[in-house]
Image (cartoon, rainbow, N blue to C red; front, top):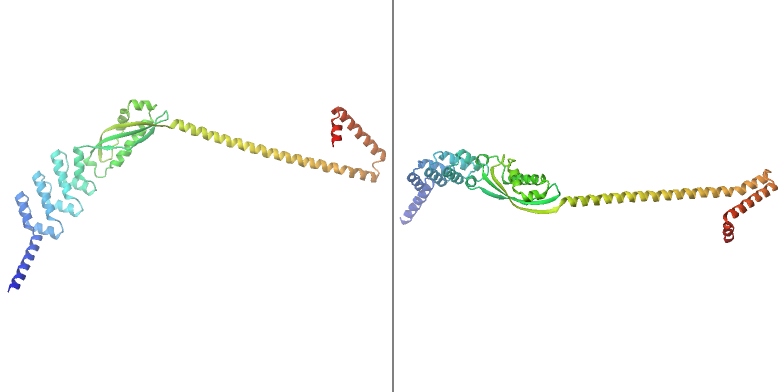
Length: 328
């Protein structure tokens, strides 16, 4: 009998646990006391649909206490089943209502499903955020490089959070504006004297178009003078021109050496032809003797002519040929 009683008590306890799990009676009492109308059947059906009743009821209580009548149970369930964060949505709606920001439940859920923190966006709308840009290097028209750092104060644009660009786009556009502003300056001294001119020029371009933020101000935090890029470019250009001139001079020298060697080769070839022709003279004379075209007197006359020519050359040259002949 004792064992049967224990079994019955255990089964009753298990049944009660299962019942109170699927039918959260205390949660229903909490909701009714807080003024939220919800039935036990709806709580039971939430368990069946695998929707946590505690989250839904707590969000409904918070919205009811804040006076948000547009937050309904079906909307919260649908947003939870879609993978949204219902606590963030309700917190954002309450904060927006207290701050006087026009934010509907549909817009808040759309922002949350887009992957953005809607509660943080509402806080940023109330308290603007300051974004520090990385160092931006730009060159003025006089060739001097300037390195600028800026602080961008932005406020979240609730209506542009869905589909709007993020902080990276803001930083990229601000950097582009700084480079354009410094690059259009005639001298780097103008930028150093009036750094606010960069802020005014950048703000006038409407850099927050299509982004999830509204730019309130752009302040230049620091400007440093970098390298003399213009002088460096001129030095590099001069070095390149010098290398080109040296290459051209080397090319001309190589062509001159090649031409000289070619002329020497032609001279050697001509000299060889002369020597070859001179070697044929005795053969021609012998052939003339054999054929009777040249007599002995003709030969002697030719020898006399050669002797006279040699004597005249010696007299005209001051004896140098004779001296050179003796040396030979």
